[in-house]
Length: 274
Image 1: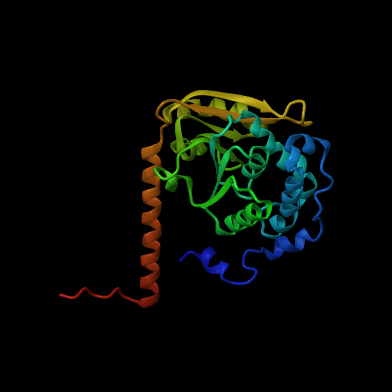
Image 2: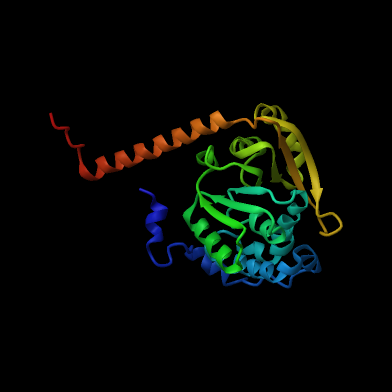
């Protein structure tokens, strides 16, 4: 049984009581820095509202830690928004493991020409994302519940983004199969970027990467620039077969759990007629 779906039927089930209690301590993200107006332009008010939602509902539902509230602008929202510098115009983008919408929502605010899919497996997070997208009026954003390996063959994009999801090589195993030919994966990695890339180059090459770099974005705009690992794919992004196998194995495991649960509730399985 999907316990998260079941819980969603109860009032307040998507709110973590402990997180809600902690959220009472700090719920104000503070005044937006001057850089926010420069980065978001005419979407500045929407960016302010998104940051407020992170500081309130995001904390209450356990998507953002209360201690992060005072630094939401610098460490999270602006840190993600400057990723838009690397995006060509009119592309499609999938934010894998989007969580609270970082970096996907800040990017979508800065770049209304980019079609963004927020891919997230957990119901309480997709519920939050859908509420945010609706409130901010983001018609260039789609929220999709699922895991990356389950989307292979169903979703193909020009760019995959991710932040704080997994080590680089594992992340590439999820993200590269979703890329169109000559697409790219952009992973926000902070101070670990160079080391993760050095440790992952061989694995990335097996996944169809033809060029890998660490790029700093937001220089001259942010006090601390954002470090991004850029992985460019060739004509045939790899990892598709492996991702498909993982998806099949995951489905088989879930089906087995359901069958075992049915046997546990109803005793022995019914005998077939004849």
